[in-house]
Amino acid sequence: MLAIFLKTLPFFALIGVGYWAGRTRFFSEEATAYLTKFVFYFALSAMLFRFAANLSLSEVLDWPLVGAYLWGTAAAYGIASAVGFLRRLDVPTVAVESQCAAIGNTGFLGVPMLTLLMGAEAIGPIMLVLAVDLIVFSSLIVILITGSRDGRMSLGLLRTVGVGLVRNPMIVAITAGLIWSAFEIPIPVPMNEFLAILGGAATPGALFAIGASLASKSAERVHIAGWLSFCKLVLHPLFVAIAALWLFPVDTYSASVIIAAAALPVAGNVYILAQHYGVAPHLVSASILFSTAISVLTVPVVIAWVTAL
Image 1: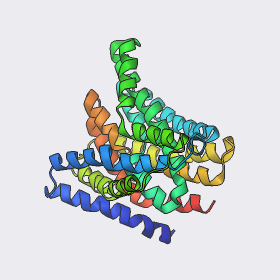
Image 2: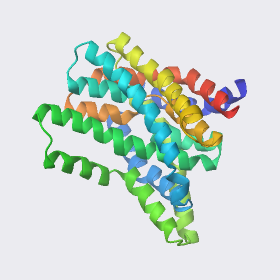
Image 3: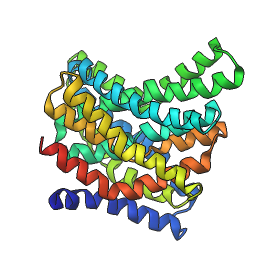
């Protein structure tokens, strides 16, 4: 347990350095936004493309694994939704809270940290988790918020969801990499070195950006943010573990990776969506802040457990 904690500590220390830089205004909010954009569109995309280009589609598209992660995530999402409706919240607010309870920071934190801690072969299950989060649940929140406001489903709504997916650089990078792999095209040495150098900036850049962005987050509605953090850090990995270890025929290693991915704190893109649609952005902000701070302790516990399976 201590060994795993010490291995995860440098990752969270980088987040801490970013938080300090943002809190002291050494790194402004504008600088953080541009760093995030660089990581999102360039460094992380290069890393994902390079990983995907060296995988086969069968290594990513594992249907029992999809089922296990989808079942566990839907369970956490459903509990948060039920609690939200019991509190008589409207559909958009319930959708945002449920997103906090079930969608982790897989792109910026999970990809760099879990591939280093659990081995390069973890990238297949991690990309599967990322794809399910982006394609299923990021689409779902848009459909629920927009559909509840319009009162109906429309072609315009479906077009918005489709365009959002096509424009997401992580989806584009994974898809392009898998297509490259499917055609068995060797990556030229200069291209591979370029991707390695650019992708190498993803880990420190993403972690620093997470910390710097947390510096601008507020801690409002503490009890609700605490509940959503509990859902994300405890209930989500618990339900994914139940699904992956008992309900679906998943190999132990892949199960351990998706359980660890489910234990990650609330994703930053939930705040972007909440702010864009004007639905509880301060609550999401507090949930990201709380879950990230608490995950310094909870993530090593989960990783230590799954690596012992």
